[in-house]
View 1 (cartoon, one colour):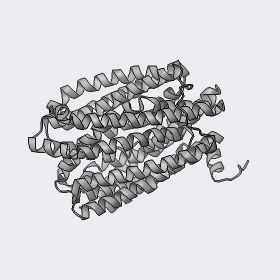
View 2: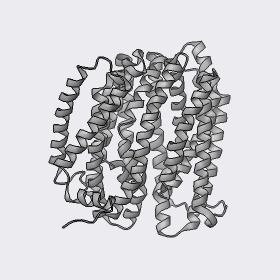
View 3: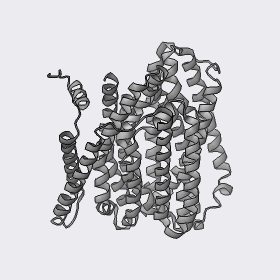
View 4: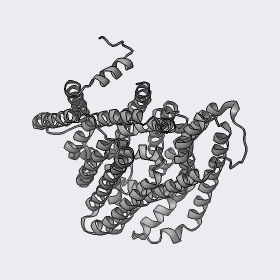
Length: 506
């Protein structure tokens, strides 16, 4: 029970900030598409530039970001402060040096590397003119990412969320408005990204310094390295590369067979798709180090119980957003501009794929934190091969929809195979005996929401943003009320009472 409360309280901070960022993020994207000169082209350049630097990011941490979330809790249990200090020092310095080397190499060989792009020469020159900004951003973001992994290992979620989302994102928004107002256009967007990223990096360093305090001493030592750590890091280095490569390839092929403007449209659909898993993501942020601790203590029954509890409520709390995005896909994209409606099918395909991922819960996270990383790699490698083959087959013929379908098939296969591994190795099942109640809740909610939303939409000729927000609130209320009435178990009641600091009434 204590672990459930701990996870919920930390996850709630992340979830609440996610709602805040969701609302603010929508207005941020809305502002960009209506204020950038040639918005689809500018966002296409930005999306492709970010994809390039993200494809390199796994090689800056060389897989040791995952080591941080897995082994810092382990070393804490063992009270091995020296290993933690030496690990943080070595990996922090290595990530900084490698990021700088990659940035220098990309800058000096940019003509040769990017000449394979099938784009207009003028567009190519424009893209290369922005490359230095992306390279600076790459170094800063890579350092921020590895320090964030250190902090997750220490179960420091609240302050990272506070600095990166509650302060960092609004700061970026304000800076974008400032720079675009003074005519900087896409350069202003990149200036804002760099400045806000530097602020977040500085804040993370400050939090890490306070955690380490007097116990930290600067020393280059490899006493933390062993065969198990190296295998773990190597596995996640390759996993990171595979994930980033497939994320870059879809945009590359869309440029090849369509245009960079279509990449901008494709990229903007992910603005809405990214809203779907934030309940699961919020839970996984704090769940990772807790899984590591429970695994070290060999309390598998407790871990199984946590998995079932959070899978059930992740699905129920994520379902309203899934319904909202699929039902109102056309209206959401129309808010960005009529040209973005071309991404409607992409949005629906990816939303359906994400619903499969959410339904299986924290499968990959549990496998990752219970020393089944090599098996995860095999599954991911198979998935990536399938995605790459499908991308080359489907994008030339079906363009953006082909790319989305390829990613969706890969995601579904990945989740099914990972769950098979979880069941085979740990005998975990995602739901308890009340699974039929969860199904009835979702089916009943779907029917009620479809009929009511369809009825009310007949009276609203133009779905403005405020109608969409009210619709989303309505969908959440209906789903939560039905969840409370139809599938609230005794355990759920106990958890709620503990959260509200109430004693159980016998």
